[in-house]
Length: 311
Image (cartoon, rainbow, N blue to C red; front, side):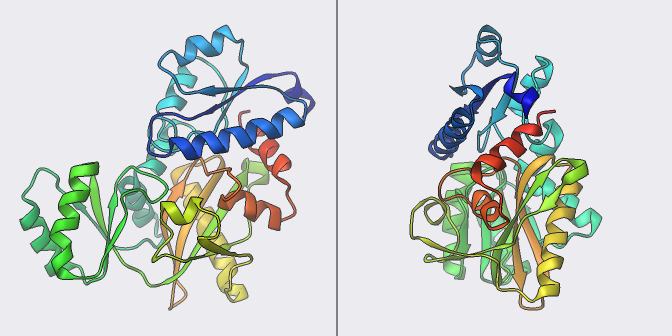
């Protein structure tokens, strides 16, 4: 803590992704916490001349509060690596893998971590033909997801055959890189991972009960739209298995310092990992701070613990 108090810190937030507003809220809350704790801190938006700005302001380390593309996908991490400026959270490769849901799922498959069955959609091919292939190989309902978006942006659950082609066409048009995922019916939970190698821990399992059909963007960031159940309503052995699966997924991608692992626990007690967020939200409605609080870790303590991952 003393060494960190000697550093000039920049909280980097905002950016250009669809999660810009959420990132600004995360960044402001982190900035307020660090300021209250007497750190030397400034808040910066992601800009074209980022490195020059950081050097001009004599920044010693960067707290990354960016979400989505250009901030959570390894791009900013790579720039900071080249400039020799320490930063919080996962490094370049792990950030890129976590952001690319297809790449992450292929790794989960390779190392034996359960993940819902999936199929990539060829955006250049005929959508009618793609839809017909899906009808033959995937039962309804099924899930359509963009490959590299966060906060459930662009995610749709398709229940009827007649809706498939229209929704597929729209999602490909809006996001280009898209995949289909098997719909797993079960409890929707999430597990935060914090700490470096020597003190890494899985936080309490948080169960999410959205008022809408699933935990989409609105449900995530609108007060009263989702019920948080802490700890999740899982038998003790399954609870521990879910935490262990989250830790395994974090390690499989090489994540560091902090992540949040999203999981569907099926009726047959299998925790299916759907994705990993390498820069989880830190807003007043975010999952990670709620899990930390249940574990007895205050928001200020959580911020400092993540800050320590820069070294």
